Length: 74
Image (cartoon, rainbow, N blue to C red; front, side):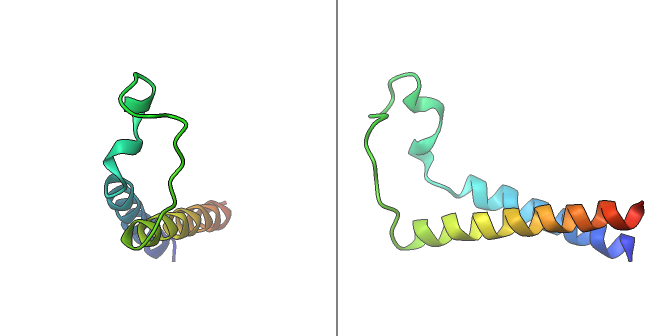
């Protein structure tokens, strides 16, 4: 059973990396160095909102699978 959890954990980790990389490019560290208006707020709409919600869901699933994996392994 532990092997299956590790495989699921790896797949969720890869999915999480892909989802984070697909996020909006302008939301990174460029705002710290003056690349964009730091105080401007935006509303996420459409695909951007879906990606954001999917990232949160995958992150929660990754955390729960990791927690179960640790509890089972002892």
